[in-house]
Amino acid sequence: MKAEIAKLLSQAISKCQSDGSLPADIEPAIQVDRARDTKHGDFATNLAMTLAKPARKKPRDIAESIIAQLPASDLIEKVEIAGPGFINFYINQQAQFSIVPTVLKAGAKFGQSDIGAGKRVQVEFVSANPTGPLHVGHGRGAAYGAVVANLLNAIGYNVHREYYVNDAGRQMNILAASVWLRYLELCGEELPFPVNGYKGDYVWDIAATLHRENEEHMRHSWDEINHALPADAPDGDKEEYIDAVIEKMQNLLRPDQYRLVFDMGLNYILDDIRDDLQNFGVVYDEWYSERTLTDNGAVMRTLERLQSSGHTYEKAGAIWFKSSDFGDEKDRVLVRDNGVTTYFASDIAYHMDKLERGFDRVIDIWGADHHGYVPRVKAALEALGDDASKLDVLLVQFAVLYRGGEKVQMSTRSGDFVTLRQLRKEVGSDAARFFYVMRKCEQHLDFDLDLAKSQSNDNPMYYIQYAHARVCSVARQLADKGHAFDESLGLQNLDKLTESHESAILTRLSRYPEIIESAATQHEPHQVVHYLRELANDFHTYYNAHQFIVEDDTLRNARICLIHAVKQVIANGLGLLDVSAPDSM
Image 1 (spheres, helix red, strand yellow):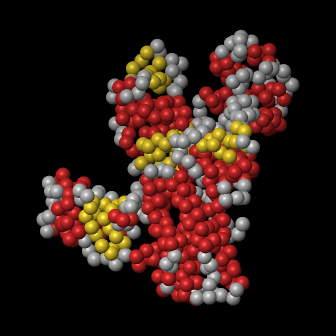
Image 2: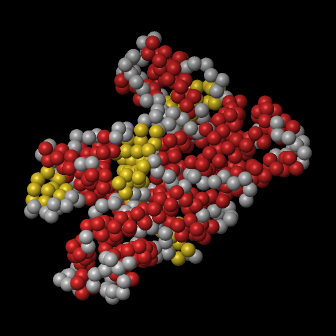
Image 3: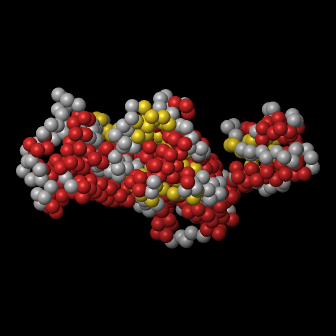
């Protein structure tokens, strides 16, 4: 309905420009909103007020000109000017019924649009370091990113889903050292495991595979390794200690042996992540390797561009980026004094590469702990001469699990955490996906495991799915009672839907395309969740108050048409959330 009114307004503006009542060079941004108070109409626009300054006319005079040029429409009962120049639209009561045939005809495509006009958008999400299994914190980013991508796709954007694989750098070296030390223990060496090593059971699994396939060919005695190592925590510095262990490992093993250990850890965990996400309904168009940025020279090109443009300097043997010139709180290191490039240098190269690939927009979905990283990445893009406004960074807060009213404690490095796979096994993928997107991404999420598993109206996902299943049950009851559904007859008699519950549902159904547009453009999947909850409530209230399978053929089929439209919209909305719409429960 909003789109139809906007179309009428656009035609009216064109006519006003043709007759000279509005300047021909004005390109107005037409915004139509639902009226807060139905006494003032069903929809309203402030278009006349936005045109007042460029047209150099009073808003009410402009509103009168627009109304005079509005094309005739069966949708509109009357149009009024209110206040300083608002244009209020009253919808023809018969027009409200048009939503039912519209939904039934469009089917799974209802709610989709071409607002994005095929523009290319890259959505990069999760991108967790492949140093261990995905935990429940990653799960929220996965669900949120996948639904944001679905929503953008639904409004016409060409969406490219990408996972950035951090397969280079210090954390991967720590994983390799952790695997090797566990391998040495399997060889019979007794050694203290580093405080800063990865301690999860999965490290033992990788080490066992390494030992089984390579026997003891990479064994070195602990005395040899421990010679000249600094003290580990609590007596020493745990960071300095683990770096020393990595260096000793690299010196003792041949390059091909070190790469074997490194790649075995990387590939084992990356395969596990791929499998975990795929079973969670998250599929990517591309898994982009960080190593590629070095191999194809992107990192060096980035450094050269920044240096040639005067945005770097050397200090204490390191190369620094003048990020403070672009609003960052301090300058950042690009190349350490040992000649090794930083994560930041790779990240700049990665974002430069994204824009070079021709994306119209780039959306990064990061954990909330990365909020300080945003201005420095944008600063780097600006320094490179790229359009930093093309980059949007959405921050996702951590999810806190509760079981039996008690908070579930987690620690990633110690290996004491709940994996995404364990969560899916406990509550199911549907519930995990749904509960993860129930709140704004920037809000903390308390994930109640008991509620997610419950089959009650207190569980919003169950409540919505039950509405879909209830409509399906009506179809089965209809057949059991010897009736056949006549859609054509129902659509011809929609004017028999005069109950207040029916009017509420008709209004709610008409809002669905607006919700999808808003949720997509604002990157807020929770809007879809809240809408489905309200539609389900409208339906359950209607179901409890009225009989659908009545003797009157015309009324019966009209009501069946209405609830079939409800079923379709619920299925469409749940589909965008990648949550199933069951036929029975």
